[in-house]
Length: 94
Image (cartoon, rainbow, N blue to C red; front, side, top):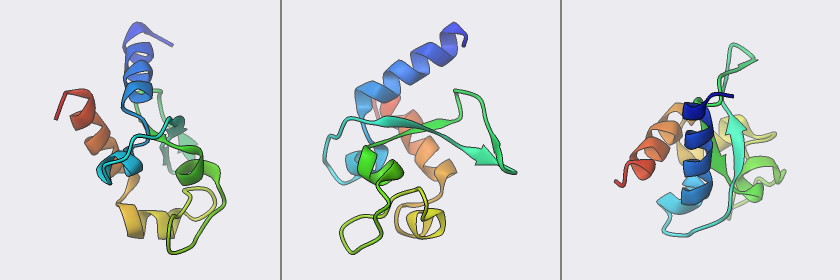
């Protein structure tokens, strides 16, 4: 992992879960690597997700977890690419 990737991951930890943040809540986050064509991307292609939104295995009216409900997760919260863009904005102070 290079210095740029380490800094990015530190920033993601600072902003917390991007889904919660977009709803005005701070939640500590795990790092989720975006998959493209079934392959994990670099550490720069990551989004911060709290345990519930990441691997909670939840799909109800309150929340949807990315694992294993990717389709419903993206329907409710936006694509991983959209959330990545939102994380970049948050890191930049926006």
